Image (cartoon, helix red, strand yellow):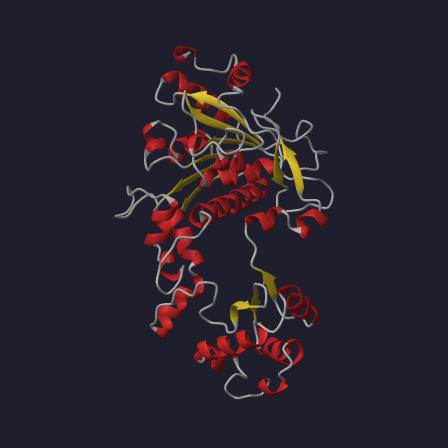
Length: 399
């Protein structure tokens, strides 16, 4: 059957796409699971997205900014096939089971217990198919006192402590992109690929659980260890860094430039070669990162007094020439127009129900094949074709 813009060919041994021949059934919505399955589709898997009849993935209605379509949905759902099913009905469950019987992976991120109530929980599916990889994404995991709590990205960022270290000293904030969702989706993607690799060697499937809370807790990394072993809360640093100095945006004659000195060699290059102050290299007040962090305000003021003597382009060129990490403080328009994306030819067109839109190639670049960027499906666009493909395999009592 014709897919929703998936890999070329039939997924045979000669197909160069890494996941060609793998079929994924996704009962998904919002961001976390759709991100994982979009990357699976990018890598060549066939992804069949089961959507609620008449409504679909609720992310379809977040906004209408992309030719009347939702920006999140366009970002996360290319290369998939959409089938509308009422999973509460016998007919819907029969179709779902028929799809799953042909699949390699099932992934879901419904409310806790919802898949079990539908007869599509991991235990039931693995009992039916021991070689199946079943992934359940949840907010807080399948047990524990927070099991049934609502778990939107913002709420998990707050509950995990991420908001407490994000923002300015005056104001806690969430991140500008949904990092709890993204972390969860990427851990799910990694686990699925690992499970498929193990299955190739052993024939054994997998039951996998990924929680947004635990994924975000993992990303808290250094802040956790500082709290546990130094007994202090990492402060909200704005553009700065709790453990490194200088690390911030510094003024120029016409703007700002980000500078991030990672070690004492970088400090020497910054003050001696870029800023023309060799006397500061061995100054005991600043010679080590620990000393600089202890005098952060003093160091930042000193460096700012020196950088403001340069134009932004001039300073950026000098920083680059002497190997000091630096960046422009871009906005999103600056990203869209970024010369590095242009030079590496990263933009492509993606087909959608309302016409072509621009999209970035997946960030994992294979040297021998360009990963596909398939069509974003309309709600239920592939329902009839998929049902026709399943003809003769459905439970006739529920059809």
